[in-house]
Length: 330
Ligand code: F6P
Image (cartoon, rainbow, N blue to C red; front, side):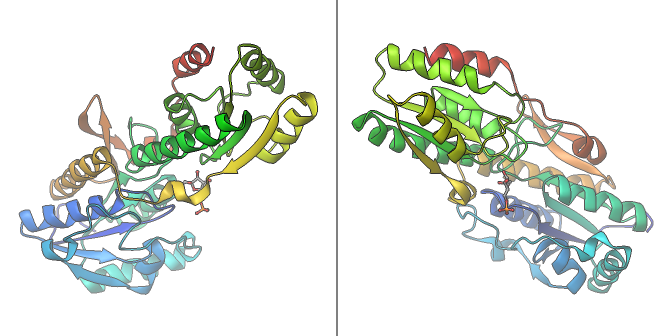
């Protein structure tokens, strides 16, 4: 495809795990298209819907009343077929048939990898908006959905704290983050957790026991350990609870797995604003004949990161936060 071809219609889709604020991003893309007097098509169910030609023409009014809605009106799916060349060719043909000239991809690593391959094979212009609660995308300080998930977790852990201190109990709370500890670490500090276990660092079980003993000695009426799904202790949250019960019979232990509730709910103001800013930028990049970029935010400025870097790089956790958490849980 000729990269300087005038863009008349942009397709927008959400893919991978959903995140609060994805609707706000869709709304922004659609309304920016209207602003620049070009057409916009919604692509249902990510790459799978693209292969099947499951498109809908959308305009500024079709996205009314969605800025505050969790989930994604365009749905999300994983597509094995898009991993094959034949599947991608089908998707390309469907886009051509619908007159779609460029794509805004809202999602994470997997979504962006698919977009890069698609661009390489067909020269199709693609721009990404980072949307995942995990905040694990390189090149951007924040992804759409992360702030909302943090607030959800803090709110729930505050409630768990109420019951934990009424019964003098220790709670292990598992939060999402298969490969990243952003939610665990930040929500953990926000909710005053005694210990936080994250995938980026193996703190060791001994350290956790020592810390819990210290808490007990200092007269705390409850303790909360936040465990990211992908923590490196080698034990899941139930095994951790058993381990502590065995080694510290003085503790009465309970487990709470927060699960997918962390992905739902009305987006925070931060996520709505972030999604709105990123949607505007994504469309403007495409109209400027830019491709293979992800919209990012750093120091409160909207910037871009090469999709390849976003996918290959690792968003590093701020280790200073671990120190802060240690001091706070004294
Ligand atoms: O959205 C990212 C994430 O929440 C991960 O932290 C988690 O491991 C994963 O999604 C689970 O997603 P699913 O149940 O959709 O496979």
